[in-house]
Image (cartoon, rainbow, N blue to C red; front, side, top):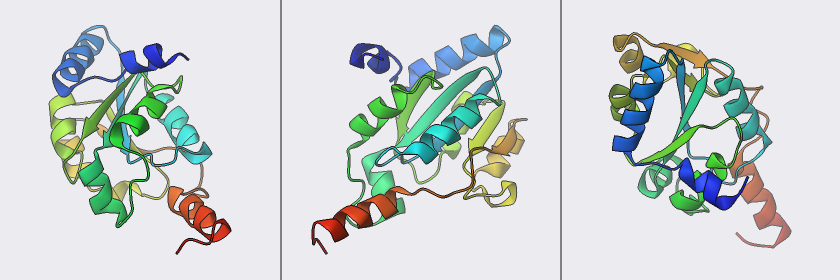
Length: 166
């Protein structure tokens, strides 16, 4: 996919609200998945493909840099939000990408009201922080993807070890 085509999928929140509303009117089942997506890897691709299979449209919310740093710690994210969002947008399963900077995706869920909020297999439905918000909107929380066997953290550590960085 070209950079221009992927960039078309990157939208501000207002545009996401309008697009999701139009999809809903057209009978589409909208799924929202979210994460940091630092150093995109096969686990991310499998998670997003599985999330897309839960509906007909997939919106991905990417943590902004402040939010990502708060979740991941010092030295993270490795890549800035704009680059991470563009990589996610380049995946065929993804219809729309929105960057958010709040600690959780609750506010964006409330704005978009997707039918499904998909989280990766490092969660269980009862441990997803936003599950009450999703339920209050009439949506469902679902776990998607293969077992957690990949992590950006591990990739970062492997690179550090190979290059002698602490």
